[in-house]
Image 1 (cartoon, protein in one colour):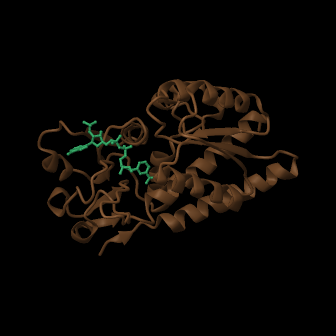
Image 2 (cartoon, helix red, strand yellow):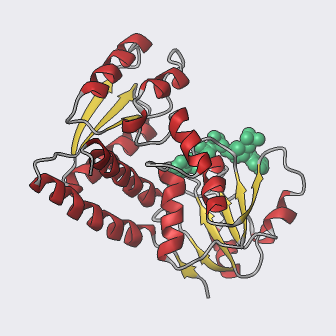
Length: 282
Ligand code: NAP
């Protein structure tokens, strides 16, 4: 019988703790503030931004939304970021990706002050994660580490296999597991013998972006399976793991929805709180 790793329950516990700390800062006259920028009207991005704003409201974090039209120029966007960088009441700045094609994502990411980069995408923060000296962790991998900790699943000495090598999920995921003394294998679209490698995993993280990609034949008996995927092949949210066939083989598994997704938002709130503390020398 597998244990369901409940992201809603764990994120609620994390958020309770954040709300307490935000309230303590407020008692000292410090407002915790997050600016969320969205350019264009990508429906999935709108949903994510809505969830982030709701989480801020729930936790007492002030949120400011900049909903910019799709034809916003890169210069206009950089101007807004420059203004937000200078504001002491805005601790975190998040620019929802993807951006329209005429805007260079790297230039935009580089423009956010590293101390306000609550997504942890800026090269300075990426470098600090690499050497294990960081303030912010990228939200999705950090949320997964929190889920494992809460579920008392120790990664030390385990063989962790991460499918996916994106800068946002796969690579930082592997790095965080390495910092916790796991033996890590990263797989991608050119990996040979993928199923065989996955079958060696004590902990398997699927961050592929393909619905039901991980099937039962790719999973070792008793493995822990973390499903990062958020796919909507027929409009309905579905993970990268074929949950129905895989779950019975696992000791623990995350569902979609209700798994990694809520944790990502909770960790964004955590990073915003950390930013507010650092900027106020706490
Ligand atoms: P991404 O940038 O598209 O990266 C996907 C990775 O999967 C790439 O490294 C790619 O390999 C690899 N891949 C693709 N096809 C493969 C195959 N057949 N075999 C092995 N590897 C393969 O995606 P991402 O941003 O990391 O996101 C991954 C998934 O997580 C998406 O469904 C996304 O929506 C979801 N996501 C969820 C959350 C959350 O909060 N739950 C947050 C972020 C992302 P190559 O590098 O060789 O192309």
